[in-house]
Image (cartoon, rainbow, N blue to C red; front, side):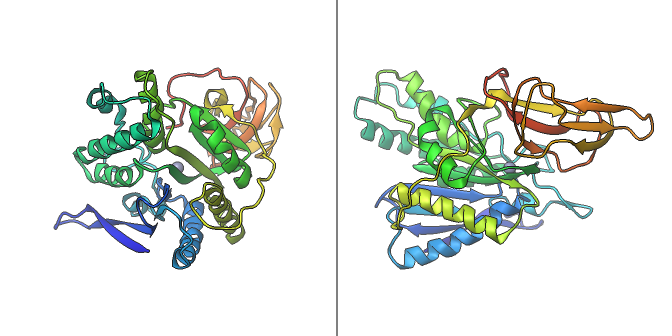
Length: 371
Ligand SMILES: [Zn+2]
C-alpha cells in the first residue's frame, strides 16, 4: 500500500487543500478498481464505508490477495468538507461558483472521436487499451480554472482508465439505491443484489456530466460513433447512494463494505472466498421513470408513507400543512412506484423538493438528475 497527497488549492496566501488517495495491489497486474467516497463532501455514511474498506484492503494487500489495482479515495471532496455555514456543513455545491461538485466533469469522448478516427478495429482488447491511453491524455490536457476544477481533474485522472468505478454517496433520507449507465445493467445487477439495493436506475445519459458518466458513457458514445469497431462498455461506473445522511452506523458500514469487497472478489480483483449472490431486491428501472414531487405551497411536511413503501398512482404519500392558512395539500405520484428518497427538511417553501418515486415506465427526458 502507498498513499498519495494531491495538491488541490495551494496558493500561498489562503488555506491550502490536499486530496489523499490510497493505493493497493499494483497497476497492470489485473483489473483496475477506483473507489471514492463523499464527492458531495458531507456524505458521512460513504466515508465510514471507506474507512472499513481501507482496513480490509490494507489487510488483503499485506497478505498478497489484491490481484489487480485498487485506488481508494476515502474523502473525495476536501474543498466541500471545509465549507460550513453557521454550523451547517454545506458540501453539495462549490460556494465560490454555486456549481454542484458532481457535475461538469470533462467528457473526453468528443475529443477522442477526432483523435481515434481510423485507428480502431475489431480487436476489442486493443481498442480498450488505445481508448484508455487517449482518455488519460485528454484528462491530462484539461486546464481547470479554479480549485474545484483541479479537484475534479485529480479525481477523474485516477478513474478514467479503471475497469470499475464505484462512487459512494448518500441521499438526504433514502433506501439504498444506485445509478448506472443502461449498457452496464448486466454488470451492475450483481452489485445491486449484494448491496441489497431497492432501486437500480439506468440511463444512457442523465445530463449535467456527473462523475460516473465521465467514466462510463465515454465507452458507449464511442461505440455509437464507431459502429464498425469493437468497443465494449469497459468501465463499470456506478453511483451508490448509501441510504440517508443520518444513516451512519457501524453495522451498515460493515455490511456495505463487505458487499463491495464481495463484488470485487466475484470480479477476480480480490482473493476472497466468494459467496453465492443473494436474491436481488429490485429489477433495473429507467431513471426517466423517477417522479420527483415538489411542495405546492409552503408548509409542514408530514409523511403518510415510509421510505421503501410501494405507492399507487394518486395514493397520498405526504401532506403539506400550512399552519397559518390552515390549508392541507395531499401529495401523490401520477404513476405507481417505490418511494425511495426524500428531503430531510420538514418545513418547505413552495417548489422545494419533497420526495422521489421510482416507477417502471420512462416518461421524463432531458436533465434527469436533481440539481
Ligand atoms: Zn452525492
